[in-house]
Length: 190
Length: 244
Image 1 (cartoon, each protein chain N blue to C red):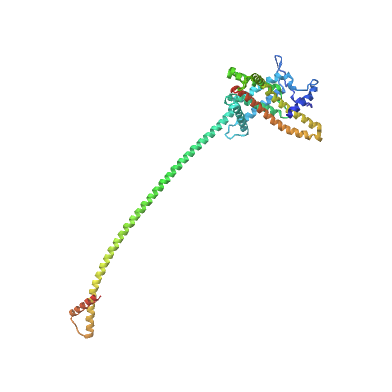
Image 2 (cartoon, helix red, strand yellow):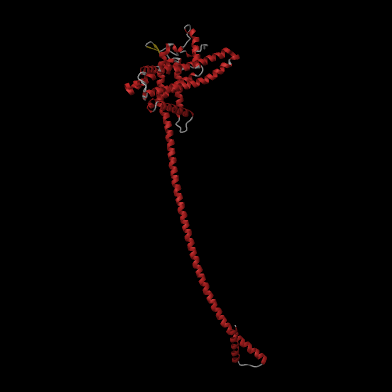
């Protein structure tokens, strides 16, 4: 608006001298109109053909190339991601399987060990029983033997004591009878 | 340089005089700056398309931003059918933009500040769009002058208004760009002249204005190129998709 006002005032100011000098608006002087249109046509046509045939396809090509590159990259990234997911799934399933197997092996091992322990235990118990039985028998045998030996020793001691004290020999069979009688009595007492 | 702020718009011939059938087609300073703009565009786009990188460099990024900007502008205003006209809109926008921007350099010449240049563009677009409309829709294209849902009584008046508005399209399109460019550059020149005439005492004030106006003019240079291109898209949309 300011421009238009100033322009009109300017025109009014220069109007006084418009007929006097070459001043005024050179735009309205038709001397070079044809020349301007002529050169404009040539130069603008040239620039139009340059732009239409060379520059616009080039810029468009650049932009399209970038877009397709970006699309390609995104597609690749997506496919990689899918593959990674698949791999992860596979890995997880492998781990699950391995865990299951480990548990199975563990339980099997435990069972086997338990069985082993059980059988060993039984074996040992059996052995112990056998040993105990043998030992008892031996003790029994010892007992009987020792009793017999005690009888014999007692007879000898008695005959020696009698010999020492009374200075005479008693016959051995009577001593034996007496000792066995006493032993029998003792045994009964016990 | 004279103090006349309009002096910057003078056209004078450079080199030999070229005359064909009595019409003067000499190479002028206007032609020179058209050529400079065209070469600048070529260099800019050449730098922008030199490397094909996935991660773009500065120039490649700029050219791709420009491409996407115009692509979005066309698809927003004229839809998918306007795809074949993309290079034209692109060239139009970038040419007007570079002409405006080259004009912002001191001692340069602003090609788009001449009514004949903008009118040539506007007439080309107007005639092209009209022919396109008739080729695509045949005589149904005349429906553009008959808005739907208008009472029959008002129809003649509306039609006249529509026809006038349609016919004034090239005028408004060309005058908008030309007047904006000329007014801006004239103002810059006037304020620049004030700096000299007021001298050291008060000259800093118009200098400040000058600096601010330069910023504004750069904005206007971009904005007018954008408006020019988007209006072309809208006219194209009318021809391609006959809504009304």
